[in-house]
Length: 219
Image (cartoon, rainbow, N blue to C red; front, side, top):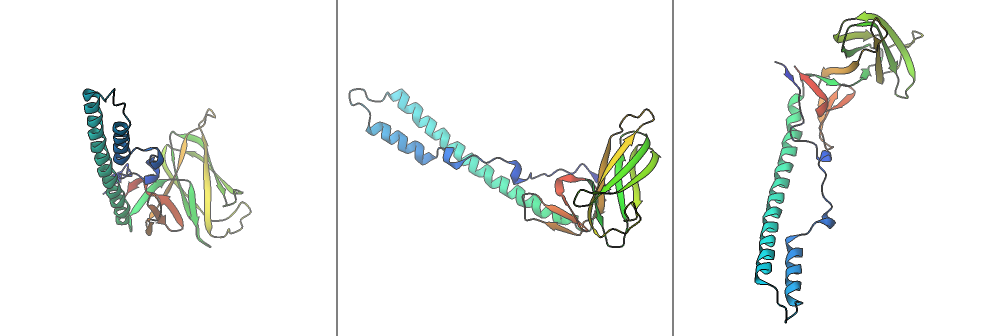
C-alpha cells in the first residue's frame, strides 16, 4: 500500500496566529461600558431607545461570537492532539520525505536519493559536513529524469573514511545544452521514533529527524 501527498491535517499550532489578549474586548468589558454609559448619561438627553436596543443587540452578538471562538479553540486543540498521536502509527513504516540530509554511520556507507525533473547530460553530487565544508563531489555523468539513488561509501575526496554523523548534499545537474535541470533531494528510511515535544511531530529515521509535513510517501 502506498499513500502519497501526506498533509498535516490538524495543522501545527505555530502556524495559527493567536490574537493578543490585551487587544480583545470581553463580554465583561462590553457590559461595563454599557453600564457606565447609562450611569453617566445626561438626564436631559436620555439614551435613545432604538440606540439602546441596538447596543443590546451588539452585546448579544458579541456573546455569541465569544462562545463560537471558545468552541473553535477547543476543536483546534483536539485536532492538534489527534494529529500528534496519529504520527506514532508511522513507527516501523518506510517513508520518503523531501530533504537533503544523510545519516552516516561510522564505517558505513549511505544512500543518496534525489529526483531529476528532466534528463540530464551531467549530474554531480556535492557532499558537505555539519560545518558546511565540502568533503566529496561525485560526478555521475548522464541520468534519466525521475527518482535516482546512488551509494556513497562514506569517504572524502582523498579516500579517507569520514566519522559518522549528519551530512548534507546538493545536486547539480544540467542538460546537453548546459541548462540547469531542477533536482530535489529525498530522504528515505524506516521511522524508529516520533518526538511530540514541539508544535509538529518530528519523525526519527535513524539519526535523522524530519517533520511530519515533509512526508511524500509511506510504504
